[in-house]
Length: 145
Image (tube, rainbow, N blue to C red; front, side, top):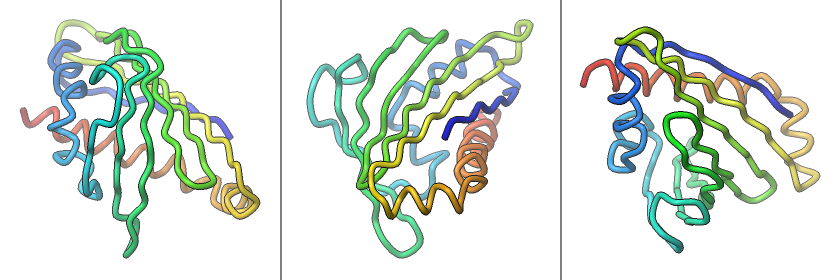
């Protein structure tokens, strides 16, 4: 499953990227985040791995982030792997004039277990909805800074 989403943030691209690129800000716009821990590689650089834990309902979901590319603002791509699912997410930031930023995400989900294949099929609309929710939360956070 693949989808593309866009949002305009009312801040200059340099400010947006600085906020996006700081893992200390994650809890500011991802309230379900329980923890973010660097595991290996050079922090924030291609090849780096981190453990990310989210609260999903009443249970915790742990995933491993692996950074593929980091050429901000043009591109930040990472994969997020958890039991039964691999999500590859490309993030692109482009200036719109001097005081706005166009953020595009391209998400590709691969379901590696039968259970998740069924879930992915029946919940197709939930994945883009959740991504857009995070994008809106980041926009709100960034615009308050």
